[in-house]
Image (cartoon, rainbow, N blue to C red; front, side, top):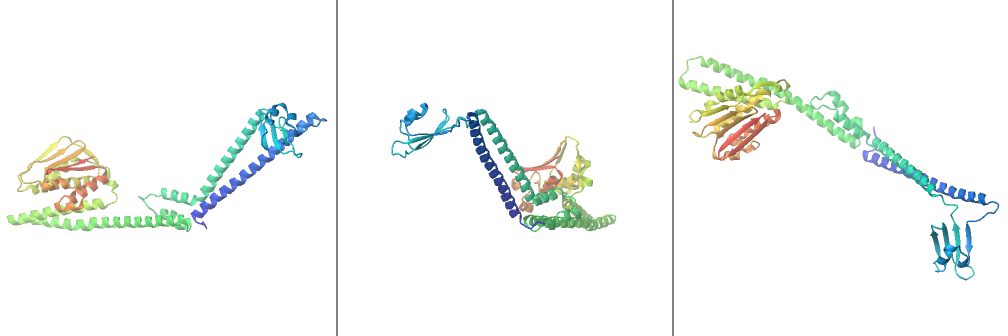
Length: 410
């Protein structure tokens, strides 16, 4: 349970990290100043010890430019302005100050030849400073990582919990792991609560979907079975020719209704792993679809040409494939103009192609356009497209100048 919000914790963590680094750098600079000061004093004492008992001073004053050391005389005669000057080759520092006697400026010369460190010592000091700076940098980076990790720990915990959830098989344990009470009442808690509610809605939807498909599968198929049995009994009776035609229409309507029910149940089910890996042949399904819908060509002078270039087999859902083929065959038979054949069905090794002629507006067919359902195409082709997308097949439609070509590739 966190008492502060995520933004507050991140701000506090950032401020803490900056404060610690500032203190560390402050101590580092203070230590560098003290070391430099001690080093200068130590060099001065070493020089005095070497010249003892003749204690010489590094600071000397000159009232006359002619008394300056030889390298400075020419420079002093140019009447330099008051200030401090450094002469690196001679290792001299010179201060030009006004004379107390009202004469020309005086000069204070500081000889640092015996005080400044040698070049080798400079490299050592540079190395020490580089190591110190690198150490402080690594310390700051490590401290920042630790502090920020602690600040965003609840976010990382929530991400790990969500990543471990199997959305295909939600359980009560998953709901307990994502419970918003575990993450407090800050921003992370709000996000966890939203995810928790979403998972609850998904679980409820999946439960309703399973209940509906299980119930519908039984309740909708039972009347179809009863009607089919009644038709079989009627066929055994002495019927007139008109009655037989009526019975035949009822039988076809019953088959269409059964196909429609199976089609929508197939789309409604979330998954059906038992049938998704079944191996089946394409040619028998295509032949059955043609024979089942051949009555749609009664009264039309249309030929059906089947080009069996191969005898392919597919590993997948046979019922879904049969529904897709039946839709394509039915559409082709229903919307082919009288005398405008043939309807060509081509079975290839990896594709099924159905080509037919249709009305003049067929080039505007769009499987995803719901408005096209008024022409008898939209609903069937939309279902075919959804079935193919679910089962990993590729559905395509091409229409131009009244000719329609549909295909399913696997």
